[in-house]
Length: 423
Image 1: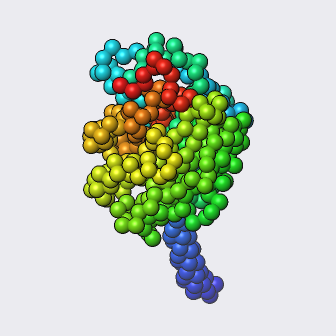
Image 2: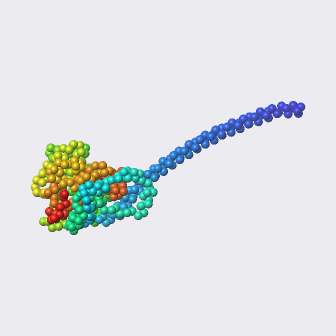
Image 3: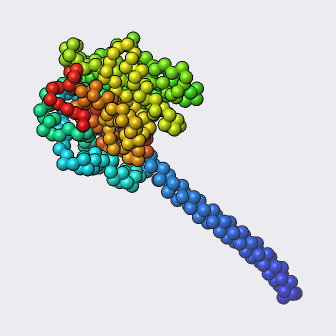
């Protein structure tokens, strides 16, 4: 009986054990599947984390690079803003002696060559600038470009007082540019290099845009004032012209500031006319001149260019009887494309030199009668701020696609006997 009982109990025990084993196997299988699923999810999360880390690293590196570049520029400019050098009465640089016109042309073009280097170096790294941030170098003086005067002749008249007249198309100057500290400081730094500068392409609905620029310019040992014209142009493209001038070096007759009357709308942007007199010499001997601040419409197909001789005659007959009339601004053409003005006896301060930051075009100039303006010293220049400040093309574009241009004149009416600046 005991044997039978034992026999009957054993099958029951075996079935229970099998059930437990099956349950255990199911649990192990479920755990394995969950573990595999968790492992897969963990692997995917790791991949996402790695990818996010790489993208984040690129973003931080780019931000650090961009900020470092502009911080370096601001550091450089800050070192100069406390004591911005003024233009002395003497000629600070000696123009080179050219053996031939070909040599002169090649020398003028050197400041605009090898622009590919700037394109290749436009992707800055943070490490590149960390090497120079500790000891920023001072910005060198803007270089002069000779336009026919040789070194010996320059030295003979180096003690005579002179002024520098400039033009700068600051291209859509508005509140956005005004809020960029490095851009504003660079523009102010450029303006301080000259005694009077004509500005084009001021494009803002606010009335304080130029006064705020003036406040920045006057954070130096020079004191400037400004004259600004009304908004001109079509309703969709209204712009203003302005003059900024050093009050210690020049004076103006504000009631005589006017915009050229153009009832037939022959020009898209009516030029702004201002009269100035040098203060470095007695008033009866001082050089007086009229500046015609202009921008020709690039869509006019040369029609406005043909009007310039008539514009000069109109300004000459405005009642002041001023014979020293200087057209300056954005002509939209090179000197070789304005042969009609040359045939009319006009002299171009800038010849054969690109005036855009890319070096691709010559658009800006100072033009004046060769016979009337004896005060011209022959010294001119193009301010290549892209190279001077070691900027990328994109950074230079935040300032302007145009480079400032300038020409030098004697402060005494009639210039100096025996000196010929014009060719």
